[in-house]
Structure formats: structure tokens, C-alpha cells
Length: 220
Image 1: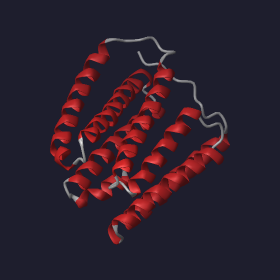
Image 2 (image 1 turned 135 degrees about the vertical axis):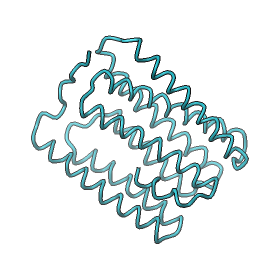
Image 3 (image 1 turned 90 degrees about the vertical axis):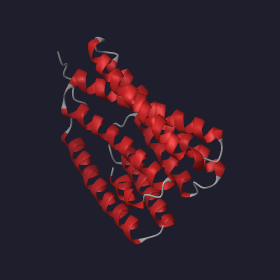
């Protein structure tokens, strides 16, 4: 049985701000795609960072009644994109993975708190758990492919930490959609899967030299 969540969007003006955010996102996707096609790596990374800053500013100062945990998660993504600019420096590599871990963990905590008001159901967790095992296997395979390019073993630890936090977020997102089954939970799940696709493509594009994947990284 699915439960309907009481809508958070209670005022028409909030719907307008959310639609404007969609338009902003579309513009940023175009800008990032053009930067990826026509400019060098440095410009691509700065474009990504500036895009993240604009989303954070819009969320904080334009969109009314924002969630603090979600704000801090976006802020962590902004910092991650900042450290991506000089990713080749060892310290920035560590901070990149650390900020990713923090962002995914905050989003997971936020959704777990939303799920606590619903009755726990065990059966769907079996299927979701199987999906999680497959995700961990993919994480292991991906790490095996790029491990030789890591600076040291600490990078592998941080890679697994961020990857594990993302898998936990995927687990929660699927269960969140199962319990609510509404548009909001569907959009959240799509967003989480987009983050996963972006991170996997980024890893392959950077470490294995598949530059054709840079555009999916920016789009998702």
C-alpha cells in the first residue's frame, strides 16, 4: 500500500520558483555542454563550478522555505566541484571524494528522516538489497579499472567511501519511491540515478581517457 505525502508546495509562487529552477537547469546544461565541446578542461571545470554556485544561490536566496540539510548537501557538491578544478593535486583529490561522501550522506539522512513517519516494510528491501549488492559489485569493478591511476591507497579508501554513500542513497531513493509512489519521489529517484550516472561517467572519462563521456557527465 502506498502512502501519499502531504505536499510541501502549498503556495502558487513556490511552483513558479520551481519552474524557473527547471529553466535555469536547462540553460546550465546547454552552457556546460558547449563548454565541454568547444573549450579546454580548465574552462569545463570552471563552468561546472559556476553552475553549481548558481544553483546554490538560487536555492538559498530565491526559492522560499528551503530545507537546511538539502542546502548543505548542495553546498558540499559546490565544494566538490571547486576541488575538481585542481583535481590533479593530491589534497584536492582527497577533498573531492570527501565532499562527495558528505553530500550523499546528507541526502541519505534527509530522506531517512522523511521515511521514519511511515510503517517499515521488509519485503521490498530484499529486492532493493539485491540491487545494492549489484551496485557494490559495479563499484568494485570500477575501482579495479582505475586503481592503477590513483595516487595511493588512501584514494581508493575515499573512492569506496563516496561510492558506498551513493549506493546507500540509491537504496533509500528506491525505497522512498516504493513507499510514496508520487511524482516528488519519482523526481528524487531520477535525480539520484542521474548523480550516479554522472559520477560513473566522470570516473571513466577522467581515468580511462574516454572524453566522449564528458557530455553525459555535465548533462546528468
